[in-house]
Length: 400
Image 1 (cartoon, rainbow, N blue to C red):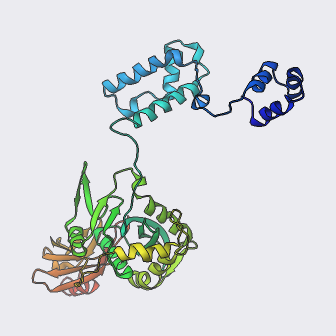
Image 2 (cartoon, one colour):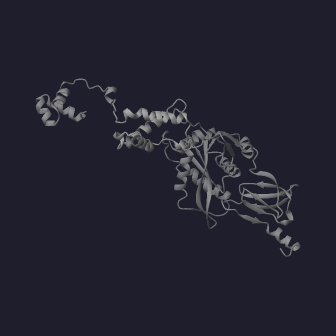
Image 3 (cartoon, rainbow, N blue to C red):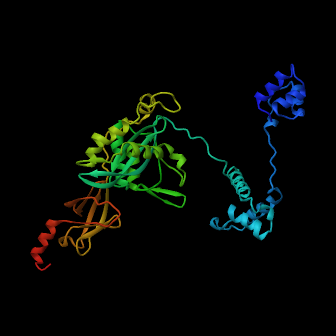
């Protein structure tokens, strides 16, 4: 197929030159030159774009198809099925097809074609474009290093995005449990002055648990959701595209706002309210939206902000209350690994345990406060003591 410049040269030279001269000058066959001299219809047809592909693998494709179909019928485990490399080896070594010895790429390309065909099946036809309505949000956690009161610590930050306007807001939290999720959401709702109509979460971490294909939300999060009147959707496992807005925001905020490492002094609550939410919400607010052609802050004001639900009149206390019994040393293990020691004066005592995102409080069955500790976080087991109770116990057991 000649380029258009060559065809134009042939037509131009044909007005004064012979076919032989044109062919010799342009270095093409005289039959080709004659073809384009005589050609007077230059409409482009679809069939001209269709290319016939012939491969040395064609005579053996039925062998590959039969082997893969047999695997499907026998329910062979996925990790024990033919790969492109193993199929190429099988065709050459076992089936003795020497013609394919140097054709691994050809076999691999056919494997990719078969996988693409399978993805486009009736039951798995591909993905549909996602449409986000006004006031809908996505939420997810990320991790970053912070310098907290002079100590380097890895903390979690809850990220919320509004895909319609692409606005983002982050809240730094000590963990990812249900109390942290609800506390972060409550801070964001207060900051933006409303509640999203729907929030899509990454998974059920902290606010529920997934049993096979069924998702069960925790009672605490269910109460919180009913109080603030928003709907919840959980993205499917291993389906990052369903929450691409917040996935991208988690990395963008970490690479931009958390470099260099941020310093936090005082409480996380105060830091979030005075610094973190303001900085993250203002980040790229004036950037032009990639599809709507207007500043993201303007789209937020005109569309998302007006679609938010109003805040409830009554405030919601984010906590969880459990009934537990202390050990013979007066201690309790919470979050599967952290030990809170109330001292031997409270040994084998039934207590009420109130957990918030930042504190753990212990009460008697009559509701009398025993002790409040800072809530422990981290992968390594930790232990905290009520020093006053331990000293009081030493009066009775001086040899302890």
